[in-house]
Length: 214
Image (cartoon, rainbow, N blue to C red; front, top):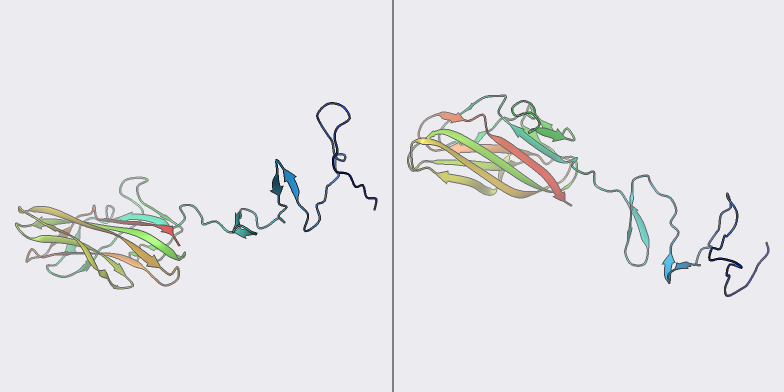
């Protein structure tokens, strides 16, 4: 191998300088750097297709990006109709991801099970979850409530609540952040009313959520 040692190479004419011919490759050995505008150009070996290169200030790492929008869902009871709810008892609401307003329900990733009305995401992280209940014939000073359930239990006891001032329908909703392990954790939507008799949860009940980060 021949070696040329110089401090500067300049074109003999014009302003362009060609290095090699078509098909040739220029190699920079390990430990050496190529500078462009006084900035080091770092050669990184090819990694998995679609991965992202991130730097910690001294080295590069190849990471797999989270799939955009793959962990989200919105379901409703519109195609199921009204659902009966007895008084003073938390009632699990039923939902499906199809029917109702076209395009307004979805289940990206296939993680909502309409047979159980459970959402079980397969990617761990923090999710924002929303549950909405619209309850019929809630009388004066009576309440309607909505609640997020995680793994079969009330999530921190937080509930959206509305005290109604007239004998009319009432709605309640709750939105909260929920940590999910990506394997066994699941979410459900519950409602309660204290009218003293059985009434209905309107078909416009709905639940949605999406992953916002690790």
